[in-house]
Image (cartoon, rainbow, N blue to C red; front, side, top):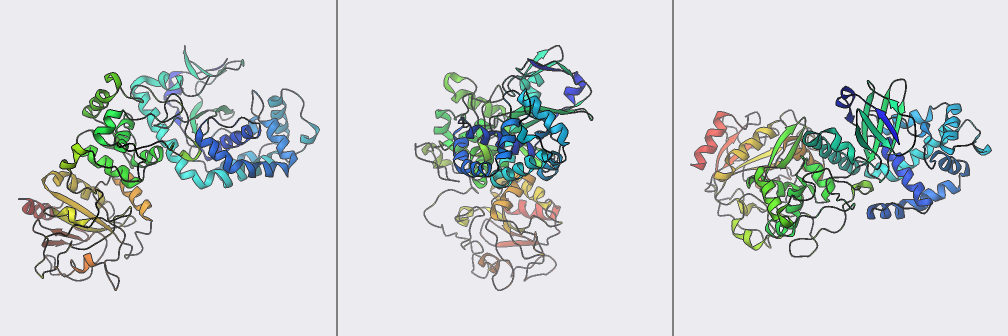
Length: 558
């Protein structure tokens, strides 16, 4: 077996790194295995191969030298080192492939002799091998990886978050044990990296990185100097079970919460962000956000900020519920150990999710369980067959919220659900100097939600083009960056000829300084009382948690 001697300081200083180049090479290996008749075992890999294998084969058929290079470089027990430079943190694909292209042709042929365990074929006795390898990787990246890189990246991030959490629970030994076949902690400062009989390497004091990839493959690489070592491993993804499939939520839990929401709760044994949950479940971002909002209000999950991300995890009550609902009352899959298995290329979720009634779950829709229909939480979206008409009236007779407006993620925002609640309507933007007000708005929403208060965000791109993104991008930004759970509408105009009817009924109200009419900038705020009348207007620079705004909200809540 091959193993590395590593001291505690080196292991403590190790890190996880995401590498577009490593992901591309892993996909090249998968294509090579497909050519050889051994396609990946994951259903998603089969579908990916059916899509991309024909084009890859045509390319190699037209370039027999590169085809021979691939066969020689991907040896039975060893990969030619120049094909797999050690990944670097933050390195783009272009920067990584440039290192492949810059490899010394003499060293490249020497690496091929090692991977072949013999002489290099005459057809490969040439100096353009690094250039040919780089061009092939550029093809694989451009045609098969880059179109789905963002989704792949989220799956990889979910794996890193899950394993980082496992370090805190069981130490590095638990993480290394199931990292990839042949990798385990031997004790005595020894890390087994594969099953091959190679002399041990002393790497104490070197930089060590762990690099997840979505295909079911892996390798080790190093470069010296500088002394940098990498273990590339197949990511599990938070939904992978021991047999490579997603761990299903217990049936009893699905019957109680709905299958999709139960899946989210089961996954949160390890901290995950909304974007990571979206990537590994295949559910739409808005749907995941709604599930998290319900679970938060029920006290089953909690959240905390980690850098710019907001991570969700189960509370003690959530853990107890999952354990109780699991067969035999034991912990659900993913509860005590990091999952094994693989994620499909591109992070595609397995198409086996059903709702609690046994039918296929529609994106963003979880049919309410009979036991929950009477306990609908105010302020949340639910499937309806028609728009409810609010009994809200303004002093001029026009009901501010008696209008139709779309929800950010599609469908109707159904403003009728806010009847009898206090509502703060805010036109929002993601790239504004006032965007950090999202934090205060979210805290305000959480602070008073149980007393009948809702913040309603209305994206608008009319002020210096500071809300240019798509609905998906806006939702992802708000949820991942600020942990927003309050409802959001579609993007609309708040001024001008195309001003939305909602704002036609709001802008006539004057603020404390006497300003009425056009919205002045992003984050202008209108407070609507329980009786449906606009009771206050606040300028964009008024902080959501300012004494005057909080006092106005509390006065309406009573």
